[in-house]
Length: 102
Image (cartoon, rainbow, N blue to C red; front, top):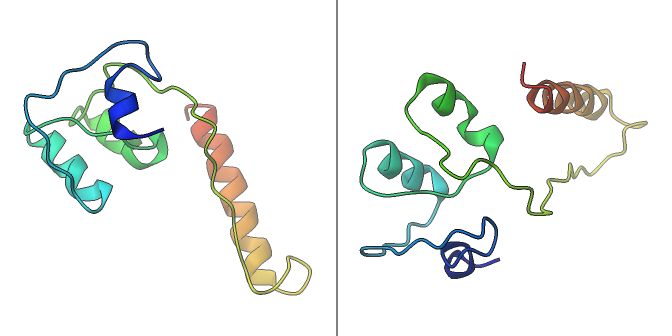
């Protein structure tokens, strides 16, 4: 979904009218701008969780599942590389922790 579709209420059903628009190359500068009060940003929950907990950002529309996902890619399989197994176990534990809100 494009930024324009999101602003037009494509996910939340609530239309947002930008006063002006600026596109940044990565979402980290966008989040910094939002935290500074310069505008709004769209980001994954896992990336902004700490900022939300500290009160630096708020999520006025909450978080809406959009069907996207992350995939772990490696040259070697879990069976071939203990480091990949360890990373996979850690990622699963962190994902579970985030989903459970702890």
